[in-house]
Image (cartoon, rainbow, N blue to C red; front, side):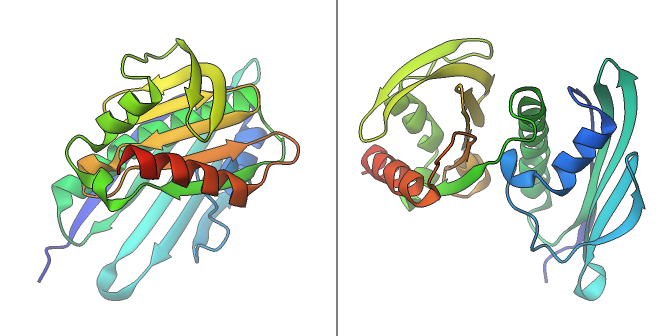
Length: 230
């Protein structure tokens, strides 16, 4: 039987938005910076707008998954976020904890990017998974090399011409061994090196332009990824 162990991930951040705007982002606008969560069967056990929110899902045999957001105004339209993700991992505790911790940093960074550059704009969200071959140890490195961003560092700029995708010009807002974030004038591109955690490489596109189409975006990027991992 898998060993069940509790976990707790704590993260503190300063965000470029009032508590009211941050509250809206983490409750209604999750497709703009993370992924849609409107179908999650979570119960809001604490809902003190706009300063304290606890959402929790409970399952069999004591399993639970809980997210807590504590928001405090800092002045100048900024907010301090105290974030706690807690629950139970049923197996591979160390691997799951490592992956969840690193994803937390990237997601909350992307939340800040959304609030600073695109807050309140309608978004078209697209999730794309790379082929199974991307799970190899060098999976994420192959993607960065194919894109021409091996040496990308936060604060840098990129001008890319990607086969089948076209021209992509923007800023590198996040980059480390597991994740890459690119921000253009109207889109957030998030790349996930989940091969480090036993899963395929993935990406999300958060398109704030007028007329974005998720089906077309997914088809375009799947074609590119198929060539990368052929």
